[in-house]
Every structure is written in C-alpha cells, then in structure tokens.
Image (cartoon, rainbow, N blue to C red; front, side, top):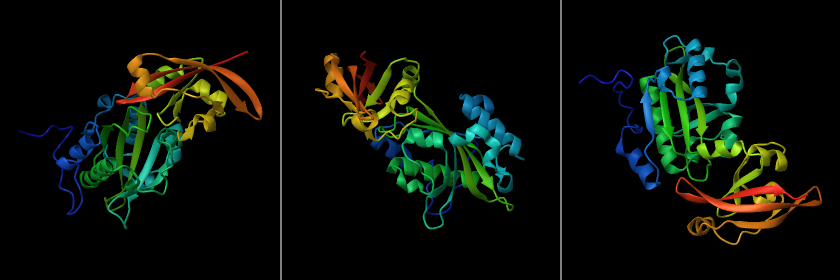
Length: 293
C-alpha cells in the first residue's frame, strides 16, 4: 500500500542517531505518565488547527522555494514581526548529539519558565530530550516540515505545545538549522484570563505556576512569569493554607480567609478563597483574591 502523501515514509537517520519511529520514544513518555506525541509530516494548511501556527505556515511559504524548506540566506526573524516571540531557532551541536538554541522567543520563555537561548536539548527532561532529538534527526534527513503536538512536564502550566518545524538549508541543500513555531494551549488558562478578580494557580509547594491577567497587573506590573516564585515573592501575600490541594479536592471544601498583602512597605488586605483544580492529573490550589476596602 502506498504511504499517505502527507506522511511519506522517511529515510533512516545516520548510525547512532535516534529516530522518532523507534519504540523508545513512546516508552519514555509512558514512563513519564504522558501520552506519546502526535507527529504529522508535510502538514497541509487546513491540518494545522491553530491560527497562530497557520499564520507561521503561510509566512514560511512566502520564503520557501519548495513549500518545505527555507534557504539560510533568506531567513530573517524581523520578517515574522510579532510572531518572533513564539519562534525558536536550533542548530546541530557539533560537540553533542543534541541541538542548541540560537533563539528562544520571549513568549515561549514566559510559558516555559526560562530562556533556553544558548542551551541544548539535553537540558530538558529525558523523555522530552529524546523526542526533540529524534524529531530533529528525522527532519534533517527528510528535509520536510513537521507538525508535532506533545504534553509538557507537569510543572509547566500548559496543556500541550503545538510546534511546526521548518528545516533551514544552506547553499548545498544540507539542513543546518530548524525554525520552529511553538504555541501553547490550555483551556483552563483561557477561562481564567477573562475573570476580573486576581487568580493564582499554586502548586502543593506554594509556588505560583500561573497568574491571570488581573493578578499579573496587580502584583507583577503585567509581567508573564517566571513561574518559580512563592506566593509571598510573587504577590507579597501572607497566606496560610491548611490543607493540601488534593485534600481540598477530595473533601470539596474551599478555604476562605483574610490575608495580608505587603507592597512597597504598605500593608493591605485581601479576601482569599482557596479551592483546587485537577490539571494533567495533578492537584493545584486555585487562589481567588478580592481586595478589602
């Protein structure tokens, strides 16, 4: 039977380089408690299913002579305008089997929690590293665009990452870089953004993993992350929570209290309602804060 034209069979990667098709990748994700990534080679525009990714797809088409690759001397991040914040550029690392980031957009950094510019794929958790290295190995051989969707580690407050990888070739036709569009999706986050009250998503160790728009404006000058700070470091909140988030979920009882807010040596008060939500199988506190007059 002939292969699907959107997913033709691939060439084998060089010796010692992992291919995405091997069972090792799916097994690594299973051990991490995550489903195997979704991969589509040569995706057509109608298959992308994300407005931002589709816009990137079209922009790359304008730079491409073959609808798959981009010539290195045609690549200019300024051409992509505001999309630049969601783009990354990687290249093979001659000293390692992995790949190194030359550019890591600010939008990706805000969601992931740190800037990966100058770092390699070896810095990711093992199952993510295996996946990234394998898919880039295959892309080097196939010289085709690939759409991937995968679930990030639990500490990243994103339901899934949708990536479109475009190979960048030199004058000899060799793939020397990868231009990727990285778009996060999270239905819970989208719902929180429209709330007029400040809402913090906090893990069991009381680290703020996400704050909605109102909270970002009230506590962090509108900044987006990093999501590695305690409630006091992030928002100046002196809030004690008596029960773990999984206990709140099990009992279905929210906690209400008055907490102090310290900002610029001034003390205010918030009425805090602490509930819990299950996200990717992990319980998180949902802290809703309303100022007291």
